[in-house]
Amino acid sequence: MSELLEIRNLRLEGRSDEQWNPIINGVDLTLKKGEVLGLIGESGAGKSTLGLAAMGFTRDGVRISSGTVEFDGIDLVNASAAVKRGLLGKRIAYVAQSAAASFNPAHKIIDQHVEAPVQHGVESRAASIKDGIALYERLRLPNPGEIGFRYPHQVSGGQLQRAMTAMAMSCRPDLIIFDEPTTALDVTTQIEVLASVRDIVEQFDTAAIYITHDLAVVAQMADTIKVLLKGDEVETAETREMLSSPKEDYTKSLWAVRSFERPTKPAVNTGATPVVSIRNVDAAYGTVPVLHDVSFDIHEGRTVAVVGESGSGKSTTARCITGLLPPKKGEVLFDGEVLPANYKQRNKHQLRQAQMIYQMADTALNPRMAIGQIISRPVQFYTGLTGKGLRRRVDQLLDQIELEPDQYYNRLPSELSGGQKQRIGIARALAAEPKFIICDEVTSALDQLVAEGILRLLAKLQDSLKLSYMFITHDLATVRAISDEVVVMKEGRVVEQGEKRAMFTPPHHAYTDLLLSSVPEMDPDWLTNLLNERGVDNIGDAAVGKM
Image (cartoon, rainbow, N blue to C red; front, side, top):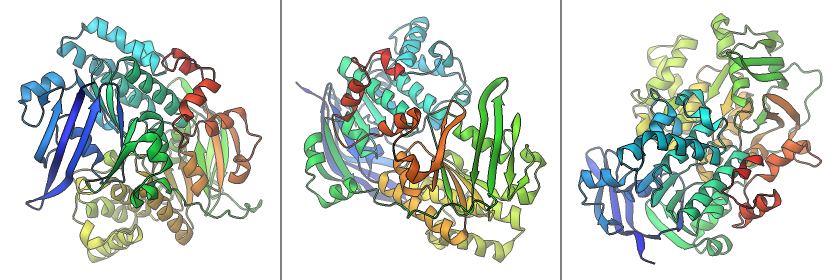
């Protein structure tokens, strides 16, 4: 079988301070139709840059300095803009990591879905809408006949990521670049998306480059794995061989990551007043109820992990705590005192005590403001500091998140890695000097080495500042690493809660058991075996949605 994609001795450079610096250093890559290549490596390894270069595309400030990229015999390095426009979207598609940052917020999802097939003449708008609905159903989106007619902000992050996968498939391309496509998904939804993606690739004989920091996920998807480090190819091997006997020390270190786990803390004193207490909270978006009688406590210096599928009510509960979504019923207490339901009615002291660190640092930081400005604003708002005192406090916060103040104060977010941007999000939350921080999927967009560093930093800050955390996550490895207690939510209700050790010890609630059994393992046969156990004969069948 002839190669669909051939990359030879590819070198890319990025412009910084009027100089061109190497990003990719002479990487080779070959891909046939129907093959899936997994690209792994830590943040800054060059995975996404290489994935984009496979499309003949580079971001602003990046250039291909040498080497070749040939797609089906077409030289993409030297191809005209017209030739590339004819390929991109039709024969080559891309699924971005952050769907929230990639969709146009001013247009409905279905209008963006049909754009490529209509413009490329693949099918009519009406036919494309019908096919889009079929793809939404295949990817287990709720209300597939209706969800596409919403705007991007009207669906969850996990749902939007699946809509982007459907959009990439709209023209049935020959090559798809998947750039961390399941990062934002809970474990049960991730299984369904992985199964559907794998089936689509097999059914249409599509070649794919699958970029991920999750080694267990790449084990389910890839025929071959290529490991990158700072733009260099470390090693490449067939998936089973790579998993069983990696040759290079760096690859072995990736396999051994996630060693961090906090020591078990003593049980909570039954007479202690919780820092935050959620009591019998009901909430709704308009007339649609989303939370039902939610109750749990978070004590000083402890981490409560809130887990559940996309749409289970985790982030909505956080919105009720912060006052962004006033509850329909119930109340939120801070240090035993009832908080006003609406944040606009809270005083500055009440506002400063509950802060948030967001999932996507890319969209949470103002791209036009320097890091020093981003952190200075809450410091000045809550403390009134100005001048040298303000600068000293910002420098202290940068020191706390283990970034050198002189190096980072004047940088823009675009000049930082994903892990560094997330650290800035932590510093911004600390600027208010809170007692309680909501961590909303703060490691889900990070590779495993960087994520471990963020977890260690959060644990260190908790111990030194006696912080309390509500840790919203779909990653049960993170739950094991950092939590003291676990709250499991499903369809807006708390179905189980307790100390971490008890929650991970059978017997479990049936839904908790489903979550635990859905965590991918470093076994290439894991997904196939799991689907068979759950009675799914055809992984592309809509029966995936019945799991």
